[in-house]
Each structure stands twice: as C-alpha cells, then as structure tokens.
Image (cartoon, rainbow, N blue to C red; front, side, top):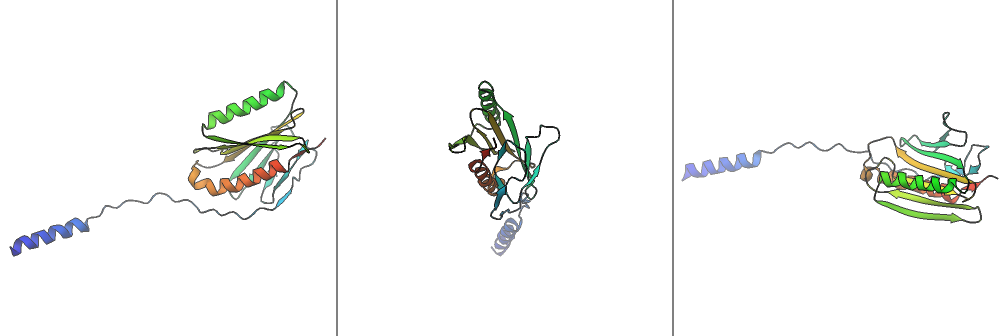
Length: 186
C-alpha cells in the first residue's frame, strides 16, 4: 500500500509540474493623446479654410494640384489625405457617388453622420468605417454648387481596430472640428 501511495503521489507531482509554455501575443503601445488646441489652417490661397490641431503638420503634395493637402500626425504615423475639386451641377453627383463607392469597397459596417452649416454654406458627411481597415474615417464637405472637399484618414500600420481605437477616437474629434469650422473662401 505504501508503494502504491508513493507511485500515486509521484504521478500527481508529475501531472501538476508539467506546464506548457505559451508565448504571449505581441503587445501594443498604450496611446493617450493630449487634448488638442485648434488653430486656423496656416496655408493661404486656398478656396477653403478650417481649424486643425496644433499637433498637425501640413504638407502639400507636389504631384497634385495646389488645392490638395495632407494633415500629418507624426506622433501616430497617420495622415489625413485631403483633396479639393471645383464642381458643376453634373460633376457633384459623380464625386459623391465615387465617395460612396470607395467607402462601400472598404467596409460594409459604416456609420454615417450628416453635417450642415447653412450660414457658411457647408454641407457634409462623416463616415465611420467599421472593422480592421487602414482608413477608419472618411468625410466630405461641399457647398452643393462650386466646391467639393474630401478627406480620408489613413494609418501607416497594420489595421487593428481595437488597438487603434483611442487614436481613432482622438482623430475623429479633430475631423469633427475640421468639418464644423470649415468655410469657403470666395
């Protein structure tokens, strides 16, 4: 009986002492951005203006026309690509339809928010794209007659919506400020 108890005890010790090593998944940085202060877009001679975060640097791409720009968040390795198009009554439906097609290709889980500021003649839509996409937010504003401005936020990283959620929320606030402060220079 003593021998059986010893073998049983040895078996239990072996059973509980054998643990399998499981590597932990790669972690992500915890990002807690500071509250933004907003300043007027520092670029002159554009058909539009708006307020941007003081954390943003503005770059004007050489290969495009002079009315396009990129808003760069170097701390997050993120850019908001902004394009402007002068429009006519026939061109405006093409541009809005193209925007909707692009968004539909990127994500089927899209939340849409409409914005309008009749005093500044600014009307627009903000699209929150669901899922793991490199472009979680896109938007456009127009005056419905002469101007169309489109923006798309792009991460320069592998898309992981859960890990990027704090930065996406922060950038969404900046984009909402951009839309709400948007005005046309006539």
